[in-house]
Amino acid sequence: FLMEYRDAFCNRKEIEADILAETNNWMIKLGLGIATPGHVMAIPKLHFDCLADVSNELLDEYDRIIHPALQYYITTQFSEPFGVEYGIFGQTVKHAHVHYIPLQGEGYSIQSMVGEAMSEGVPIIECDRKKIRDIRKKAGRYNLLIENGQYFICPVPLNITLEKAEVIERIINYRKFLKTKGGKVPLSWADQTPEETERDNVWREITREKMQGLKRLLA
Image (cartoon, rainbow, N blue to C red; front, side, top):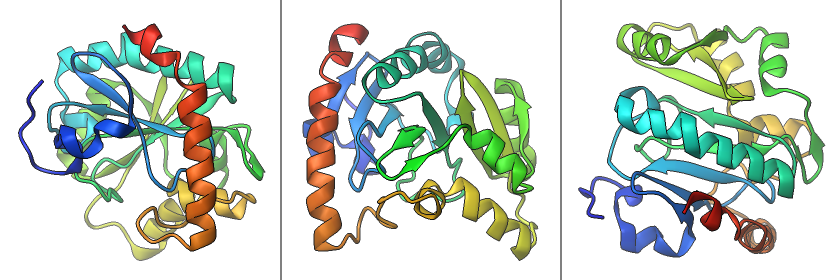
């Protein structure tokens, strides 16, 4: 499967060792500086800037196959996960990708990321695919949470006030948020301390081992 090179996720050779499972259109990848064992990413093989830009055909596959498989498998091996997609506001790799992170992880326990966001005043609403695209078109930027197969979106317009942007950043940025809940997640995957790197290597191997069956599930 050939992909146009625009970023690291478009370069198969660069990331192949961390691809845990795949279909013709999607790959499940192990990241760096993961938040806890069981943290993986769902990434379309074709380049799209964000999930709102992904074609209907690929999103159908995501909703029908990719999300249910990850929801089931991460829940079975770790705990029920939540999904988060930065929608070009907060991305470090400019290629659509959804983080799947267990709600119960190393050092933290969360009942609902959506509930946490709402309780902190983050302007988040339940939505469908059309609403995501509408907000992407009107606001330009957004953050997306996924729980139990349902989408919840937080618009991030270009004229947002600094105060509101900081509230969104504090909650939707899973690294900062999980840190406040006792998590041992590094604040940056690209700039980890030696202790964080050592812990990350262990967590990645645990994830790789426990997620082996996902390849058969998606075959």
